[in-house]
Length: 256
Image 1: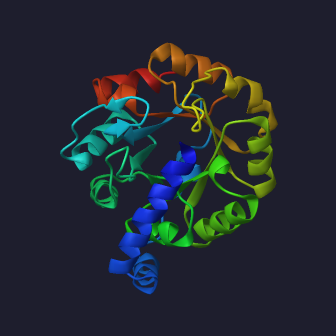
Image 2: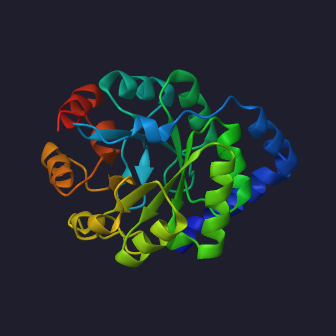
């Protein structure tokens, strides 16, 4: 499934590249104001930080919510205390778009993450041209040499890479990369099975000073408490926010 998602995302990026050539997108990316400091926004504190996600659907759960105005939802996230807004821009399975990212960037004053299946430099430039401050890199989807190149480009553009892992070996690759923001996804993107205890098993491999993000299986306050107790500095939350009261849910989660 992960290979299919990455292949589809790259195919869609190549379609966009025919309409907006690489050089044009690069020019737009370099003209953008400087990205916001996501590491400062997610720095460890006396409470858990929340990356709040604009998410319409997923391959594992199907349709989750009708989100006609992602900018309005993102504004609610900011009002509720989110530290970062994540925007799913993958269109085939998650029903997102770069237009969602651009709309959200205009609506909030906190950092914005482009969450997609990133596999080449063009997609990174698209993220910056659309206003992203962070870009997701999935270790399982990329050979180490490409991961290194994309990580370097994201940082060169002033953005922050969120390096997502799902095993001890992938955490080691993220650490070798010098990642300062490491996510541990409880969902295996090859099988879509969940393992909520994975974070606790690998968290100690992430060095002090690196921000640790727990991803997936965050559906209740007890889930947030579970991850916080295991050492999470931040949690990434989507489904619980788009299917409930986002402001009340965020107030509850950020109290942990």
